[in-house]
Length: 161
Image (cartoon, rainbow, N blue to C red; front, side, top):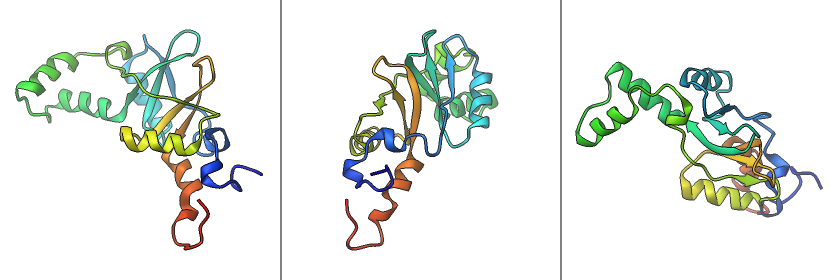
């Protein structure tokens, strides 16, 4: 039974994670923000660039919100209240990925798709990195892949879950 024939509840991340994004964008901690922006432009379906160590292990991510915030500071569209002034001082002059990447949760090929969906809903994220058992980044599960698998749940009263 292929990934498209399995019921959603029986589907694993490994059945679908590479249907839309074949290769996740990745950068090392010493990379530059301008490189992150370039990667996001080259892979617009993905909303993140994953940060990896020298062995390819996932250590975090830089998302579009972070990049937009930095752009906003640079062009002056972010208002400077007490908290935003602190963020401004913290973020304004950052150029290296190591200064602003965030930790992120991940899944493996063997994770049930429903568990990945639960993480996405709970954490309010649209995509998750896929790692091997050693924590090496091997892919990215994006919401569009969830949509491909879950579209049959809507519009049919007899849809199998």
